[in-house]
Image (cartoon, rainbow, N blue to C red; front, side):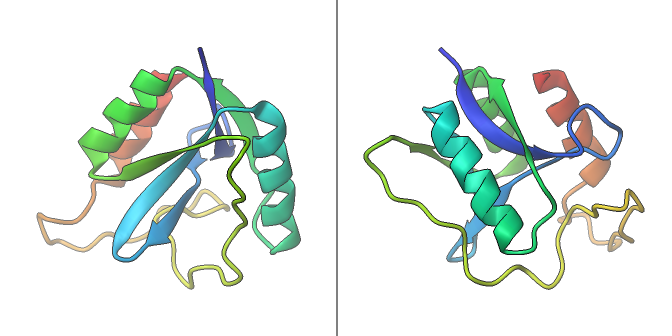
Length: 123
C-alpha cells in the first residue's frame, strides 16, 4: 500500500516535502487517496504556494524519514476534511528557487543536505 505526499521540485537536487505546522511541530501529511492529495495540492497552489507534485510512497519510508527528521505525520483518510493554512510561513527550510538558505552554526539546527538525501532515498 502506498500513501501520497506532496513534493516540490520532485526528483531534483532541490526536492522538498510539504509539511504543515501544528503548534511547534512540523507535520507531514500522508494521504490515503491520491485524489485527496491532488485536491489539497490544488488548494495549496490557490494559496500562492508553488505547485507540488503528488507522489506515492511506502508509508514506512515516510515514517522513518519523520523519525530521522524529528517530524510528526498524519495519515489523511477520505473521511477527514483538511485544508491548507490560510497563511504561509514567512521563511521555510526549503527554497523554491534552489538557492540554499544560509544555515545557523548551531549544532541543533536541521542539516538540510542530510534531510534532502534521506528524501532522495525514499524515491
